[in-house]
Length: 370
Ligand code: F6P
Image (cartoon, rainbow, N blue to C red):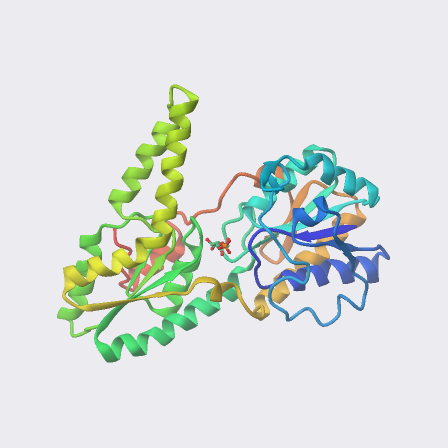
């Protein structure tokens, strides 16, 4: 068996490698090799034997002992130019005489895994991401740890915001999904939570903060997902997406795509600072920005993530023993169930507007800026 970790790292990856490895070796007597740095390691044929000794003592380690990358089989930089390296990857899979390749990753990895399945390889994936946005699974390992880190950060920001009578705008990861900001915002008692799924009205956000001031609360914590957008920004993106969809020729389509990419890059770099400045102007309070960034992905996995990764890893070994390939091992309550990669790849699990977390946040008086 081969195994690799791809996409952004996340706490629990080593626990999952161990879960798969110890189960296949101890219980089913199979051999495991790890490919380094995601699909790139398989393309460059860089591997390491994962024997019992190598799997020992890694349960609690953050990151991934295999290394990772965001390289895609179909578009990998080789000598500085993008190239389709699928054939090389398939050749190396065959040369190693693998029965199955286990890919641990998020949304991008599920797509790459499906592509390799379509080339005739036996593939099983496990859902990993702090964003919690992989489709068809209750949750993914990494999310619980990041949730704990972001919540602790909000706890700590409270005392300083309170002492200085300030707004603190805290930016939380999650790519295009708001799970992490919403979960940490609720658990940390943020006063405003802004999500990509609910475009916000800046006037309403400012009014929520002013209302707190009128009630004697001269500080506010605003938890903002990195992908959150104002109503105006959301409308601009919708327009460009329409243009892309209805482009009359390739040139028009390319231009709309490029404009969307520019907008996203600009947004990621500036949005939270601009939001903080706007709130200062509209409320008269001083405001500060804290960007939690990669701190949220670092360090040891939580107990819940170790447990989840071990559960999914050992369930993966059962599927290998039954030769049930082409699936992701999803978490469904206390069960681990196989879901065909075709159902997972290309879909993103976003926060539905009527999700119970949203309803609870509103009930306790949190503003979502809508
Ligand atoms: O997908 C996980 C994630 O941490 C996102 O929340 C974030 O947008 C992205 O990865 C950051 O990617 P990178 O580590 O490549 O900067």
